[in-house]
Image (tube, rainbow, N blue to C red):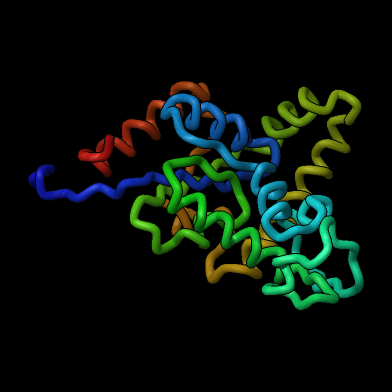
Length: 218
């Protein structure tokens, strides 16, 4: 193939799905730093909430969890809320929060190159020409090692149970909002076991992939 005939998108968005404790957040931060682009993880919740005019706690409470479609009255953080566009003036549903967050993800993709961790961003941006979707995982014992390093108050058994619970929540959340299977190779461009390679080396593998796939992208 003649590389000169390849048209590269203006923006590249790297979406990272991950099992709990596999290092997806660290990989995302390192990729963003290496490529000098934006990084979004928990920031998605805060900014989506701000744009919707509600407290970030509403997003945090239901972050990557199977929808319970909770209804009820919530106190808006400021008078009339734009979220009424999604959910009506008197209630906020999990589905409405998801749509608000998805709108912000699409806004980020249109605004510039970035890395987005989780939140079904690979599915939300499935038609975005510059999407690079990645899923990372690692053996449970490696994930447990990372979890207890990050949360030393946890025993290894508690860390394992936490990882299993979070992975189940993420899988159910992903399956509910997409027509794909969380963690299945067919759902992503690339999948990596982060226990097999140093994280910095993995960053270079991904950067090389991007440069080869989009040779004219600067």
